[in-house]
Image (cartoon, rainbow, N blue to C red; front, side, top):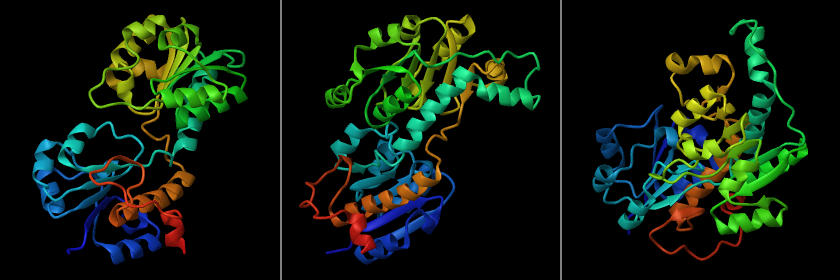
Length: 342
């Protein structure tokens, strides 16, 4: 029986994983490591992956896994993604083709929830704008007037790992919290932890600020569009640490310009500075370029967790599988990372 062939795509090369993982992976499979700074084009991807049974990749290096590429990779049976979100992948299509997908749902929970609170605090205090004014990046007469958060209400859309943790942080600065989630299990857990759960429209009407910590599904419409923005309290704040597609950016920009929305913070880059630079200069639009996860602890934790999932896939123990073509092997008596460290 031929050995499993694993192709790993990573910008950091061998430093992506602890050495112990490389030793275990190379003992259990034929491993090909491809160090690169971006995703390969389709022709390159076919050449690199045509003999792969499993592909491990960071989002930065993952090629577009559409039907045309998957048709050219008949051996592929699993993708192990160094990421929490996977809305850029067509999961039903992967399932139909018998291609598995494993992700890392909890490696950046602490960092992203803290980032969400930081964005809200910055919108409220105008901290980012005060910094820009002190550097003469914006006009000296630019207003730094903000608001206090204590006693206000934060609505959290998506109260899973990140949203649930954000709820605790928000209470710590004196915010009341209400939540909404379409996942019944997440909703029940949040309610058990003391978060008042309600419908989306009611949440929008009651909240002084709204934070989006929900996941996004490929092809789904925005959660917050023109109608939802109209339901929010005048002068409210909106924070998005999920995918940009959770919010209709054009509608949010229009609400900012009309003064209905006081501030919008998003962990990405969503507007053209040449067209909407005034909103950036005025501090009403805050963009952080998908940096919420970029923390020392997350990088260390992520290396172990990715190694765990790569080794799990090779050994037939898929971990955090969104979908997988074969039944999982019998339950391990101890975590794979403990086995590696041993």
